[in-house]
Image 1 (cartoon, chains in turn orange, brown):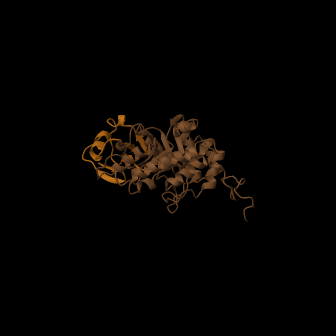
Image 2 (cartoon, rainbow over the protein chains, first blue to last red; image 1 turned 135 degrees about the vertical axis):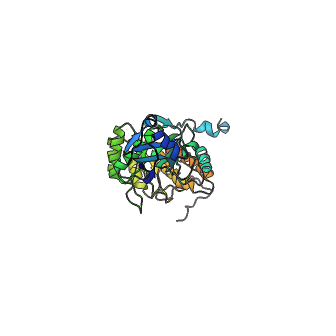
Image 3 (cartoon, helix red, strand yellow; image 1 turned 45 degrees about the vertical axis):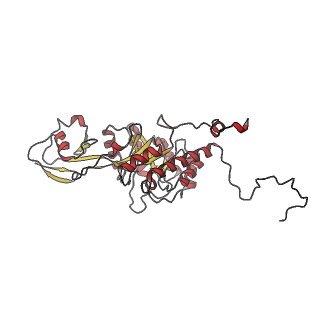
Length: 66
Length: 275
């Protein structure tokens, strides 16, 4: 299964839910915000959100800024 | 007796009303940006030294390759987070970033920053008005960053902005108040807090903005790029306070000609001073 995370193509062996994706791909999983195919997914919905082939996921967080 | 007066007992009659934004009161009128600090430790110390009660942050894609400590771990919980929409090139992108920030659960305060020019990095006032209308209607507390312009500021008031944030000079330029006259127009005409943002490179410039009657000042680059950021953050905080006090004192106007400080009569001689 192929999905796009932050603009980069990623190969997944098995279907994963959003909680597993965040835990697997984010070195620092606190304060992560997810947007799946343009829709914001609140963290309480991550466990029941399973990714499908071709999904585009954005993982964003806070950084320094003025 | 006058010789028993302490500085604080004399100025105590001058009470400064708190800065109120969207119903929330702040005693500090100095906002700090968190970008470009050499280390997170420098940032944490600068926030403490600044006494700032509002700090700005940005949103970016997570770096999947590197482990970085999250900036929020270095911002004290009593500080109000103001997420900017940097990276947005139009209203739609600014709205998207603001909604993402809100989804984090870290509040709904957003600094609208729409920039579509890579040379001068000037904010796009038209797109900023559009984003403000949409986000204010959704219940966000919206602090729009603009090129100072009266008509834009009036449109922002109508759109539901919580403040207006005019730039002093090009962002990151440390040039001070190049737009001074236009900021003064906003201070005089707009019934919202005016927060001078961008271009303030020295405490004297921050004091100047406050003496004019600005409600607050936001600084980032100058503090972040100082050799000793925390000390400069403190110097800015003192300058903002000094400028505010000067404004409240009813700072006298400038005169074009000289005006003697000592009496011009009762000299120890009778002839008239020479021209």
